Amino acid sequence: MNFLFVLAVGLVAGTVSGIVGTGSSIMLMPVLVYQYGPKQAVPMMAIAAVMSNLSRILAWWRDVDWRACAAYSIPGIPAAALGARTLLALPSRDVDISIGLFLMAMVPVRHWLARHDLKLSLWHLAIGGAVIGYMTGIVVSTGPLSVPLFLFYGLSKGAFLATEAASSLGLYVSKSVTFRQFGALTPDVAIQGLIAGSSLMAGAFIAKPFLLKLDPNVFRLVMDGIMLASGLTMLWNAYSS
Image (cartoon, rainbow, N blue to C red):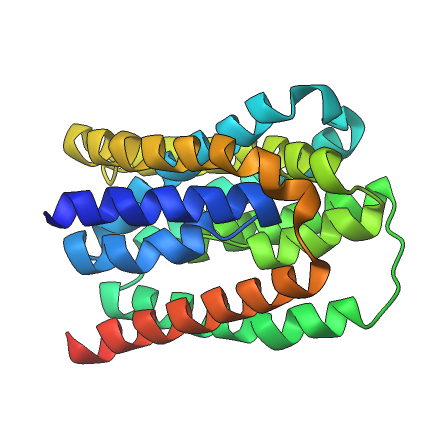
């Protein structure tokens, strides 16, 4: 029953992520932490995130901006590996607290970014890829930061979803490989991540018909609610354990 609950949350998370471009890791991670603990949940979520991003690429393949993807991924991939190595050296309780505080802090940061009419270049994407890549290695999901980065570059709708997913895919693969090299990604954890990721993939394809109907105000409210709720859940888990 517990694993069925994980799959159900994954399906909802994959659908939300397929509509708004992020949110799958934010929604699913607290459930995985509760079930398996943070040190197992983080590499498990990395595998699931690879599958989630792959599904969005497949759904919107023709719309990928490969120049933007390369600019973001080339510095982001090694940065994600470095961040993952940093994560493995941290105590489990500190991981919970850092993830929870990060998710909650992203709410005012996202609003600050939205108030500034920024237009970014490929160089900005490269710098953002290095910074966000390192943070991705540590805090599970940086979608709330990468989403405005690609939007301010000028992408929207299917092009935004596909390019953000293609750019993030390399980061999560790098993170997963690092976990495997340092023994954190065991075969059991990988299998559990693949099963959880399958529900995220299904949700992404369910979401495609609804993308064009989403109101921007609903998007902002959904993301704020997801980040606050997930952040509070992570903090509660840290201080109750």
